[in-house]
Image 1 (cartoon, rainbow over the protein chains, first blue to last red):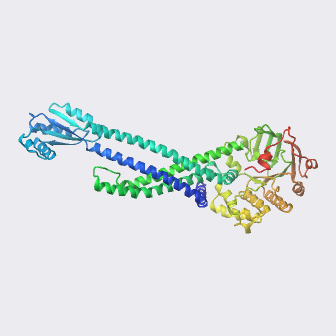
Image 2 (image 1 turned 90 degrees about the vertical axis):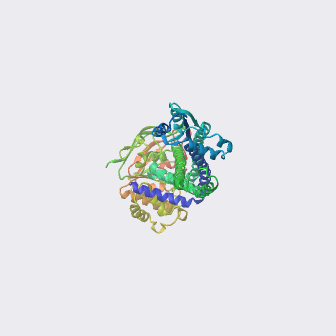
Image 3 (image 1 turned 90 degrees about the horizontal axis):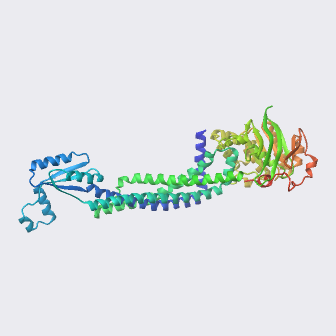
Length: 297
Length: 256
């Protein structure tokens, strides 16, 4: 029985898609344009998110030990910090290594060379997650033999704010586009329902259940949505891959969604399109059947 | 014989205040053939619409195959309609589908398998003499053929009860006779048939049970009767009295 109904639904959907080609083309292209826009915005937001995440991931804490602290003890303390659960890695930086780094940074000026080595031994710490940055820095500061701790607070705050902003933008864009998409599919399916009111009436008259009556329209909506999304993906994916190529060559500090994640993106876009289609169709058919019931009453 | 239809003290008042049926009681046994006669607007179509739950009574009870029709949940209504088939004056065929597809559609919608459809559709077409027109669209068929196709669609799933609302209303006398004979043939196969009509010719030709309605009341019920002579002069129902507006809005004028 279920198989028979399923068979009927698939057959009817295919027939309608074939019969109402113009309506199908109109819906698919409208959904495609909409999802092209959404996909582009979402990809851009994902790229920004990733870049902000990378900036946060690269953030570290520099701590200088007291100058009088013997090197062995300083190395021991660095090893101890490395064992903390929030710490991803920890590197002891001797004052000689620090000086070399300083020379590289300030182009080895003669004045600096005359000063000797004013630097203490230090430690460079990378945390597992950006949220651990502040507590780990505080804990290092509270250690007995630490002279000073430095971390890039402003950059950190900016990156966190950017990530939060992007998350919100993500939600808002998704909601707005979902509503617009549902509205578009809803209106197209209404056209289709209007054209097929007699079939729906006959279906109900001969004893089709509500599910059997609605199912071909839901499937039709899903197909429209998925095809529209597929079309959008066909344009977006090659464009983004090209962009990834270009940025990899010229802007190494920018991190974009890698190509290997594109199949996931396409799948998500197609599923979203299908869901939009189903939601729009469900709205239309529900309204149509309700109006019909009210009319009959 | 068990009762196929039991209508007990049923009244129907439409939302606009018009009384379509007034305290009607009627029992139809399984396998019976019943004509509901009366002028336009006197409650015939409303009575038929109660039986497949296109309408519900304001008062009283309607039982079809023992099911209390008004008490059925929306979920159960489709299962009632699989037992109760309907034929209309305006055929209500699907214009974009062929004769074969019109019947197959009605069968598939109710979950009949492809194999069963392949068996039942030619049987139904053969019964109404349209097997050679299986690939024709309704627009390629005459009015009589369209009505026979509508009957084939209704009868294909072997319903227990077949309701025909003015089935000869759009047909010439010859086609009308064919349609009525077809309904009688279906009845002979065991299906209960109820025909609403104001066509005396078909009623007199068949001589079956005749239930006459006037202004929403059953005024006569004759086991093997003819069209009541007093109804032939009956005009439209009186404007202020109890009568049916549903026939003009839903029934005789074509509902959907």
